[in-house]
Length: 245
View 1 (cartoon, one colour):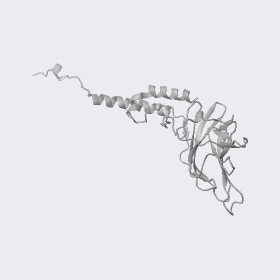
View 2 (view 1 turned 45 degrees about the horizontal axis):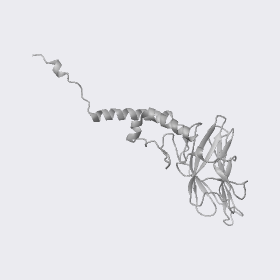
View 3 (view 1 turned 120 degrees about the horizontal axis):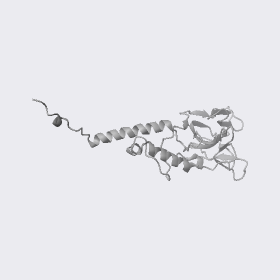
């Protein structure tokens, strides 16, 4: 007796949960590809270098995008080091082949002195006020030009530099020690390629670093991010790039 082939060929049934799994996997794959293709923020990794060794003035330069692009962290001891603690000075400087500047402000009583602004995590670097100066004080012993970094603070420095192809923005994270010497740790830093927006504390192009007043992309790995897909991600990143200009 022959089998009834017509009756044995039942259509394949894919449950709603199976369809959701397929769609999620496809969206996740597109999301991952977009992430890797658009990774244009360069992160240093954790550094943790200390500036404030007793009896020793320290100045260290860190390379950025091209030769000639770099920033410098500096700590200088006050009067008569090695005999007593008389305070110190924390200083930041940025260089670019075609120019550079720091986010900061001029001292009210002495416009020749620049203090570096202390930024909070999540602030867009490109929206900060930048001065026509490429260096400034984080903390010092001047009467009213002491900088914004107080003992024990953790904050971000904003900078921009140009190697000839356009402005690039970045941040440096600083942890101030306690006491009057103004010694500090360089925690880490990051900078973005030309045209790429970056927030203080952002380590990759697709990392969400929220700011209270801004619309934000869903976190990577969430259902919202997976549903967004590559096309939505690209549209979001384009709008953020335009908003940051």
